[in-house]
Image 1: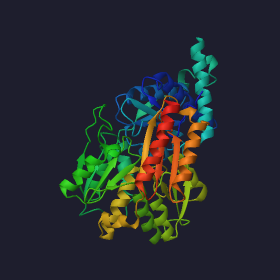
Image 2 (image 1 turned 135 degrees about the vertical axis):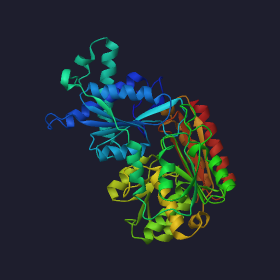
Image 3 (image 1 turned 90 degrees about the vertical axis):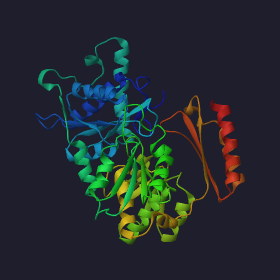
Image 4 (image 1 turned 120 degrees about the vertical axis):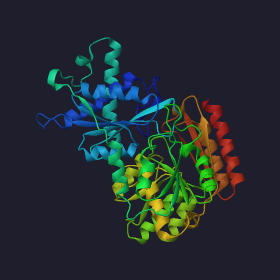
Length: 463
């Protein structure tokens, strides 16, 4: 069967594949691992931080996860609705054994997900996820057999005083806001900022952080009702934020996704500024300040060729990894880099946070605009964007992509025809039932035609 964990935890339709039963098993696996790791701390139960986004299914899955955690003998610290990076930060700040986030990030409301952080605030390595998955599968087999879980899933099931408890951290959002504000050297007075919160986890935190730094803040899409997260708003539909910037005469705009681990921007004219452009501006400033080790920048294979060109002119090495922030993070740790990320706006600044953080990224970009005396439209001219064409092909089974000769032949043929100054990237999504086809090059019409031909082959083979 396919691996339970994808590129960003376990993600699927809530109350479907991602059921409360599965969430309970994941909680038990996480709690049991924490208990095992802290077995030498006599009389002390490990603590696990649990937070999530604003989906109606988050409470259901959160309760199941916490039940699993406490069933295994660990304690749970419920931090409520906070951004994903806030859970990572709070895990470290409260000396917790792990952090758990209930969120499907930028995905539609019917999805949800469960992802984990270690005690260092870093996402779990593949080997740890594999061990947790094995425990979850053992529990599933025990459940289907009708036997007692306590006797068959191989995980601890204490009784009496050994059972874990959960408590609530009521000022979790405040802790995170204070931390984020503290990463900015200076203030943002005189700056008018528009923030699109996607009716998600940033609805309280991002506007307040900017206000405390002295910015004038106009907020849109910050009234979550459980069903409106990411609906025609946020980083997946940033055009509303762009219009607001232009109409209000603001200096800069930001759009988060549902769990605020990413951010996209707009300049003062309302023109889109993506993650590649944000990284270009931040890398250039950090290079001048001696805060770009290497000097190098870590990106994925989807980053625009224009970013490679811009960094090449500055003498900055480009470290390229496969798509997924976990792979960006691993390469950054291996090479001791401080800046990396994805075109989608999932940007990691390891001197400030242990994971992608949309608020901290937005604060750094806004700080550069405020301190430089330049408009964002001027700053982004450091990079020219090559035309890119991206098509997401919905398929019946994305796992059949690997080894499909017809698709491989089509990609090889189109790559050869486009030539050396173009590129094609074709890969299954890590979290959704689709295959992504990206083409890039100076002639958009030629690239689009090549992408369309590949899309037709994929649809014929896998739909």
